[in-house]
Length: 101
Image (cartoon, rainbow, N blue to C red; front, side, top):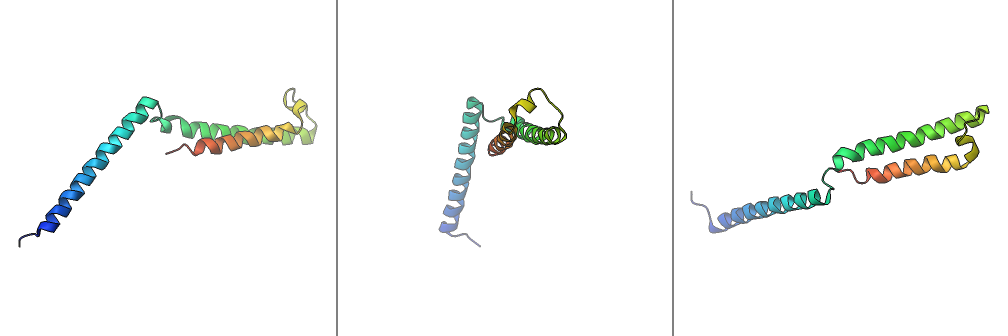
């Protein structure tokens, strides 16, 4: 059965739209590679995990050493600023996580 003219035109529009989308995606990828942002998957997740673990470990060590009275040379002198340091690292890790694609 013969196809209508409108159906052929719609199919041609779809093909050209797909082709334009692919071309645009390739151009965007090239632009990101030139800017050095295309390799996010290589550094975002390890940085996110490292900052989160560092913040949690800082907090745990500070709570354990302050509650038992153990003196840690750099950490004990900071007092309650340790809480800000650990929460700042955790907040920074969530900030880095927003860059993940």
